[in-house]
Image 1 (cartoon, one colour):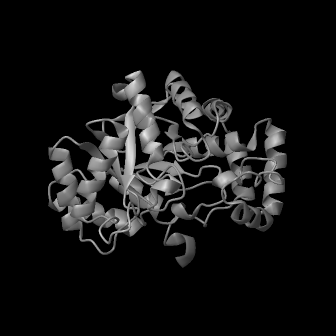
Image 2 (cartoon, helix red, strand yellow):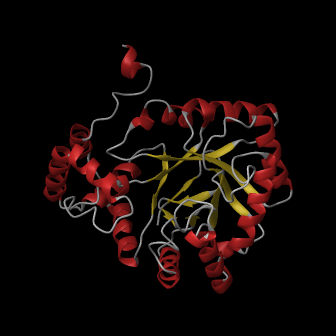
Length: 328
C-alpha cells in the first residue's frame, strides 16, 4: 500500500480509501466485515462513511439510514481495530423529520456528532466532513461548533464535501481569522467522465494545500467496463443508462483503449486519478471482496505520458483552470 499526507496535515492516509456507502443496503453485514478485514489486510487505513449511509438517504429508520455507521461500529467493537484506521464520517443530511435535524447549525453538528460516535462505538472521529455547504448557517457558527468538538477530543480534523472553490476559500479565510487549522480535505465528485473540478475546486485545493478525496471515481459504474450490462442491478439504473447513451462513443473508444493497454476500465479510471498530484486518494466502494481486490490493482498501474494523453483525447477536460479555460 502507498500512503500520502492528507493535504497539509501530518496524517498519512492510504492511496485508496474504503467507502462504506453500500454497507447495509447493497452489502450485508457479513460481507461488509469481510471487506473491512481484507481492506485492512491490504493496508487500507482510511474508512469513509456518513451518518445517512446504509439505505436511501432519507430520515426513515425503516429504510436503514445510519446502518453503515452501525456496521462499521460493530466491526470495530468485534476486531479492536479502532486505532489501526483513520475513521471518517459526515454531517449535514436529514437525520430526522424535525426542522433542526439537518444542516450545519451548531445545534445539529453537536447532536449529529454524538449520534455518529454512538453508532460507530468510538470516542472520536478522525475526519469529520461537512457533507454539503449550508448557505443558511454562518461560518462563525460552524467553526465554533467544530472547534468545540475538537477541544472535547471528539473529532480531530474537519473536512468538506461537495464544496465549490469559493466555499473552500471562504472556509479557510474564516478559519484563519479564528486561528483554526480549517479544512484538512475536500471530498468531491471527480472522474474521467466528469472533470468540472479542474476549473476552480482543484486550483483552490492546491492553493490552500487541502487534500482531495474523490468519490465516484468510476462514474457510478459508467467507467466500469461492459457498459451495455453495467446498469443491471445498480441503484440508479435509469440514470446510468441515460449517461451510457450520452457517452456511448466515448465509452466504446475507452473500452477499446483499455483492451489495447491490457487493463480493465475500472482500474484505469482509478489509476488516472492516482496520477494527479492534487488527488490524495479515490474512494473505492466495493460491494464484494472481489471488487475490492480489483481496485487494489490500480496501485500498481503506471500510466505513461502517451497513455495519459490518449485518455485526455477520449475524455477531454474543461480546457484547463478558470479563467483561462474560457476567458482567453
